[in-house]
Length: 367
Image 1 (cartoon, rainbow, N blue to C red):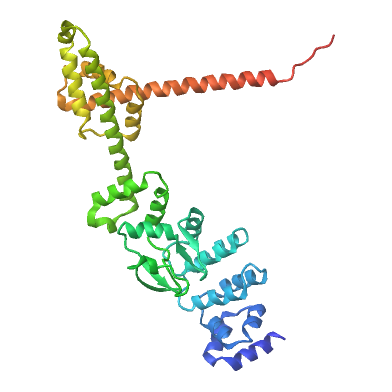
Image 2: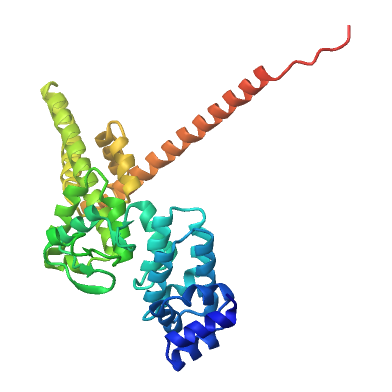
């Protein structure tokens, strides 16, 4: 059939206003032929908010078998009320040829109602934040949604495509029979939680987070989450540092007790100073980076090193300045670590050079 024949069929199916909109869109012959046989389809293509170029690109994907007719109609029906995903049509065309069709189609369709770009939704699928469901849209991973719900973070449930309501009953949130699921939302926070929830100490951290934030958990942001994660591990390291110094102090006292009385008297100053150091390290009045704490924890005979450093500083500093002792000791340990790493790299480089020379073919001169 010719274009004129198909347009006549459409004219018989639709109102003059709807036909006028189709004419103004100047669809290709392929599109006109596709919509000419069924009034609801023609009506949808008349009312779409998509530009004609977008419709033509989708039609091209359908002709190539990258989306099917059902996908085409679903996207067009969605576009009657929303066209937010139109800006991603180029990315969709490029990725649908290389990626899983189910995922790319669901991501593109979801980008029409979610405040998250298409590429971010697709990346979220790859990272396990989201998954494509059987309704042709993207939902939040069920395990992740359960974590967030248990943390007291408010979420929305979606019924079918864009009917939202508050998540109150998690067991009813994912129900294929009722077409309900937890949709894409709070993207940056969901991604940040997903990055951490597989860590071995995630469960303990959640308890720490709840204790720190109380009823304000729903105000959690990615920045606050990462800041609390760092503080949590800093406190763990500070506790480990306190235990390490205390253990070394106990061993020091046990050794002192084995000495003659005059030796104990001579060691009185050292005993008092090391006890002050032990007491200071048992508190949280100092601020160190995680790397500084790691260097201190990795050091052998740490208490002796701290004592020697404090012995250098104590003449000009008071007990309230013991944070300087920790910082400078950590700085010394860092310098030693970097020097060890430099020597190790040099040794490895020399080893590689020697191996290259041994495997290099020898040149034979004339006899």
